[in-house]
Length: 308
Image 1 (tube, rainbow, N blue to C red):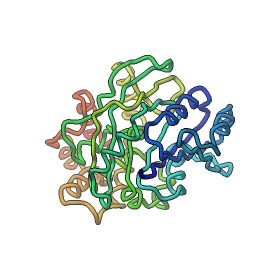
Image 2 (image 1 turned 60 degrees about the vertical axis):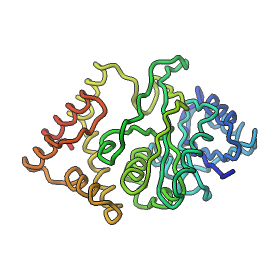
Image 3 (image 1 turned 30 degrees about the vertical axis):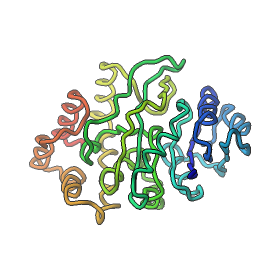
């Protein structure tokens, strides 16, 4: 049974952290090391972490990572853990406020066992949305009918908590290049898998994605709230500028590894050319880039405005 390392970054998570840790204990797969790094919480999160760390419970080992008093923030807290943990065959990202079904890790391992271990690979699972009281809201609807690099340029269909990545993908990461650039760990790994590696979707629902008011990331918003957020963060804000910068960083990091098709896609979307002709090329790009019609229209408007 191969070693699986779970990377958990916490911050002020006292309300839900115990539920997540207990869901790890209940995994059917029993060769798991859970590395927990707290980002200087001000509540009782560390008290909960100390209850679990240093113990082996049902074959699950909990290990505390010393933060050295540093508050790295998201997403560097995840990159820092991944950079410093021992070598293993498989790795999972874990949020502090969700809940994993018992078969999540075992099922993910079976998916990656189908892939040549020398190929950078990622599997990800389906999930459902729940409210803060763990009452079902809706399906995550994150499993696509087909996969290509361009399908995930502007859409994270494999959020971090759904992912398992292999050693080859980790070996492809340049942490000194990544850390400090505000590069989201989930989309970065998704881009690697779909551009120079392999992605294995798992249609089984294996996680409950908890949404609550204090969540750091957004999710499960109404249509009106989604439009408001789009206007505030993407039209008036710089969210898409940051996303575009991440694409440019990605292109620079892996430019020598891309297939011709991926290189062609990035030559259009990951450049600093803001000419009218380039905007038009993006606006009328023939392939779908977002999962919903509304999202597609919103993205094309952003292209025309030169926001990304």
